[in-house]
Image (tube, rainbow, N blue to C red; front, side):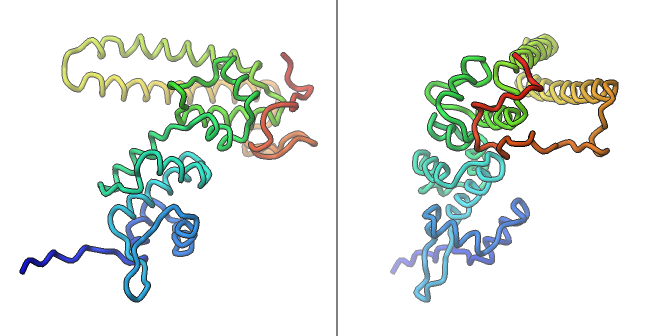
Length: 257
């Protein structure tokens, strides 16, 4: 008689222990909520206790990563899971993390996640702030859309950001010049080294940019962050808080075309 080995299931407490190092805020209530929302479907024992297998844990990591790192609504995450086949995934947890970092959004998903409308997204594309990959958008598009929406609460609209986009393109060209000799090498790790160097230079460039802006603000007599003004000031009176108000109709006197 052939007996199959019993499948290794985890209780909800064991799942919490595995997830908490990466997601400290995870709770039993959170897992139960995700189940009630239809994002996970753990098996049940005859006594009705939840039984999680490795694919359930991987799926939870996928969901939590998408929420934490990409700010996606649960409905969008559920659609991504259905489209990518994550419901049947049984690979290691690292695959779920990789999938979370590489999420692609449809146009409708981007609009909902960023809190903007069709006209506003079209404007971002017109000014070259957002680019598509085929018919889908990467996580950079979501980050750009959310940041521009936040700037719009201060009256800074997409057309005001052409200089920012041009500066970013010039910095990218400089980085490409620096790493070009590495890319020409034929060694197996050349491209990886070039990518690492490019991101290190980009991080230093961003640090320099911040320092120069802070210095210019100080020379203009404006308080430094942490003084009487804070790094994240409140929006001008009468303008909506957060990102959900979109971009249109927010220009104030402080920004000009």
